[in-house]
Image (cartoon, rainbow, N blue to C red):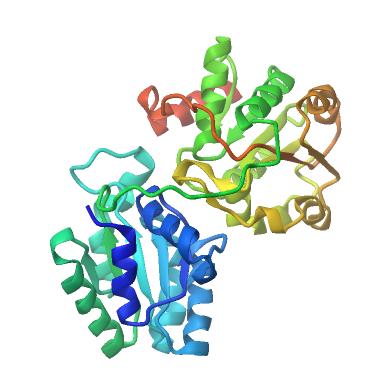
Length: 372
């Protein structure tokens, strides 16, 4: 395995930087090394397309080749920037892309479509790439450095699972005492029997699934678990809110990272068709399922954003007892409603993946049957 610091040292030889990251667990050791040792060189935007824009501006300002780290699903998010900015303006960027869903390797279902076609995707869009190997570390970087210098275009360094030695992030203790699974329990208890739920990808869906399973309620309640599509829980909830009987609430359980990734969706809730929508953001200030990399949620005010976007009701909780007492009343009000919940950055045991019991098609069909 490779030590993350050794890779970064090789990048230093070519003056690569700064590092702009949207995290993935495979890239976790590299991001952890930068957070722990060189945080001033690290930028964490909310999505991959924004990362490409920041990198492009950085190149024009400094002449240095930026490094953008992303999961391969995020490559699809970045393609508009790559094709309509970098490739036509000759703006070079080194992209480090994790290979989730690599053919022959076991992975979660949300990674399989892109994983199986990643090389073809890069080839179709004329993006030179190298699959990094431990025994050719220096040669691989030399090759990409030569391409990016000569051709002035984005290039990709593909990172396989298990290539880097584990490295933990050193972060301060969270000031919030409510745990995310505790908040999910309160929300589900308040909404059972009168709501349809949409849960964002990652630990939130897993914790909601295991909360309902533990109560013996999983088969009775309509809940759409999103295993991928980070940032799209709210748009799915908005579509449901427009299409179902208004006497049922649509409760979207979102995360701070997911909400911020496509926060423009919040600007569309106030169109008169989302009165039964309740958008709840469980904010732990980190990307929990990829290794605890920080989000930027600590620097913004979700309540002000929600108010500015036209949510009718806006609330914030960090105390479980207060939330338990007030949430049933909140769910009875006409919306759209926004609830910001501050939770601890530590993730307790999330339980097994939902995909061990249901396929994505199963999840959709069971949910649609319950909607009837």
